[in-house]
Amino acid sequence: MLIEHIIASFFASAAFGIIFQAPRNTLIKCGLVGMIGWVIYISLVWEEVDSVPATLIASFVIAMVSQMLARMYKTPMIVFSVAGIIPLVPGSLAYDAMRSFVQNDYSLAISIAAKAFMISGAIAFGLVFSEVINQILKKMRRTKAQVR
Image (cartoon, rainbow, N blue to C red; front, side):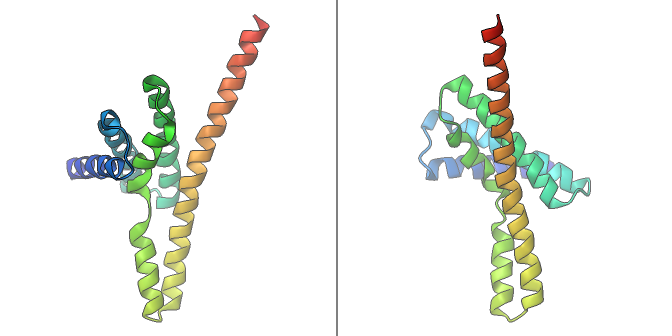
């Protein structure tokens, strides 16, 4: 079962790399970033962690791995992070919320929409939190280099 998730998330992320016109030599890396994020997310959900904190942790790891790959291959970080974050986007929840609105089931629609909104916020917060930590580490390295 995990193998199916690994393969599907790898190809989904790599395919979105193609759609977003990522350089050809980065497509496998884009797939790996998405696969890593999805494996973390699905492992946490299987361990009965709520999907919002699981998404937060997975998006944080995706951003950290994207930063590492961007430095290694001298490629903009967004190439890896956008393709890698795709499996975490709550598209089906947004669809279900809209469907419930159309069917006049407003209480269900609001609860699903709130969940989709929180997951989207967790994705954004994970990406920003990773960047903040990266900037703090850079500043500490610069300060340490100036002291020497």
